[in-house]
Image (cartoon, rainbow, N blue to C red; front, top):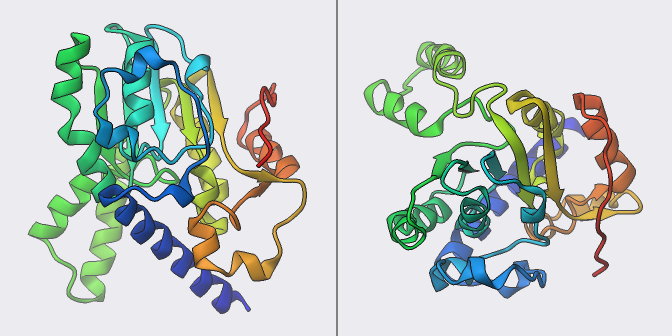
Length: 265
């Protein structure tokens, strides 16, 4: 049973990557939920980015000017570019995503958006949101120099990953005022979710906060649905049970969790 679950979760992770890679190349309406953003913020954002917004809410009202903000699963960058205007020139926005195609869309418009708003304060980084210490761009550079060809190389790779996490973290501990995410946490494999919430807590400054918009359910998603990679990548079968979602934040060290808005689909 454990082996079957691991295989299912691996296939779900692959399905998420490939589905969102395709959605970076062409809009996929099935991944969208209707969300209204402040129109003034959208005028500087290229249509390519706006068309590839696959969120389910808007965490931007919970961000303040001058803050350092981390967007988990930043995709094509729409929320990051909105937040860059909210935090202003004294603030900073970091987007983290593990999908190269989405990162390419976000990164190639960075200079154009900066020119329109008058400052550059957005950085898009390649990494897993459940492992915010490991910089996958740096890891890729090291693998080009030292490819894995045998078990000894694999052990060396593990040591390298530990060193990169320690010495060159993708996101440093206690460096962020607010963590936001928009319909992404539900895509993370079950086995990685405890680490996900622990990482969110790690990167936040003392007194920092998280503003998360995501898909939740009032009961546990049936096992047969969780085994469907298509439903998982579609933000359906990975939905958190609401009470467990809030408990996960508490277990990671958060307090004062509040549901500020609900939207039924």
